[in-house]
Length: 269
Ligand SMILES: Nc1nc2c(ncn2[C@@H]2O[C@H](COP(=O)(O)OP(=O)(O)OP(=O)(O)O)[C@@H](O)[C@H]2O)c(=O)[nH]1
Ligand SMILES: [Mg+2]
Image (cartoon, rainbow, N blue to C red; front, side, top):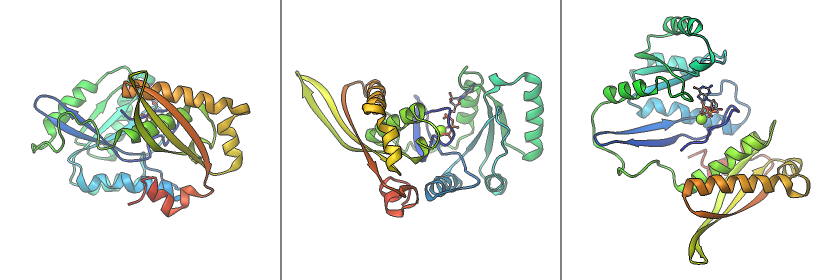
């Protein structure tokens, strides 16, 4: 499970998603998108996490949204060109453009680089995904499984809980709010209520200014109430248990540029 939103820069960390079937294990490493012009240290850290793939990946999947007219960052493209790691280009959101435009696009990308393979997919319509998966399985080198078969990620559950709250923030708030916000789960306790398990979760939402705290809370606390309810439902669906969720809003003026906070939030080593 990784969070998804229609806003850019949703993914902030490199996250492993582990695929297991009877004969294979594949570790997919989801990264943030590369930001060509960074404005703060957190974005620099996000870019750094993108570049780590060139140190340990067996195969690179370059996923491009065909609906946006954005070029791949030059640094990333040069890294791909100079790397020995095979690279599949995945042209996604094919459902949004017509076939003619699609063909033209493939040709343009071919001119740019000799990709090992090019795929056209629509993730939402599940088109082309199976073929891509088969080719991935066929292309990867054999080796021992690194993770137990039932492990789905390298991140603990509380990380995904904080991500689900952040996903709801990305949906419910606008403009700079999602980009000024960090979510940290500070307590995660399994308790019993009326004999049934109930997970108590306390999370802190960091913002940069008092005015942003006001926006997160909303009139009479109405916005944070909605955020809490929506997040709780998502967390319950994810964990399969009942959840009691408490949210606190804190102000840390320059957290996006503060080394020690970025470190404690998991952006810096
Ligand atoms: N129409 C269409 N929309 C898609 C497709 N695949 C993903 N989306 C939508 O595109 C948006 C972005 O998806 P994300 O998974 O957040 O994209 P991402 O590339 O991980 O982006 P960041 O994490 O922000 O760097 C979401 O609203 C998805 O529902 C597709 O094949 N077709
Ligand atoms: Mg993402």
